[in-house]
Image (cartoon, rainbow, N blue to C red; front, top):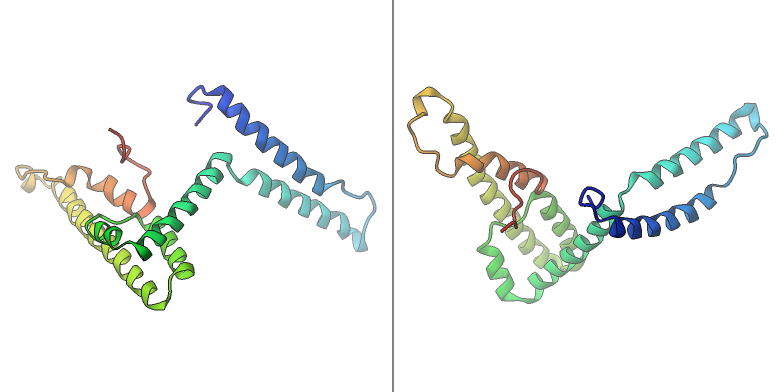
Length: 183
């Protein structure tokens, strides 16, 4: 993302920090002993352990990990606002809710940070919003597919033209279509 945007300095600074972390982790892998263990298996176990550590080091993404950290704080703040601010709960009830992945994340925070009765209220509100929005988008998606039948070609499109993107984004989090907060 940064490389494609030609932000070479920002990319270099991030990669510098990441390389320092990776190098320190590589030290813990160390060398593989040359001797054989029982039936020659010792070396294989060491090699497999080293390979797994390397895969773990290369599995993440610096930007994704940074964004995930911010999302954790947002989820925590979201639950705290819901817990303490009646106005926030009212605004939330008037909204379209969240996508399924973020609803799941918020439910986990609610489990950790809310008491029993409040957990149920929070889950009911979040799942109700998700269900309502997904039902509406699904109905429009069904209408979208029916528009391709020659018998329905003269019917208006309504909101169905963007239904596919809305259903995908509600189920997976924003990943297709126009950027949701784009002006």
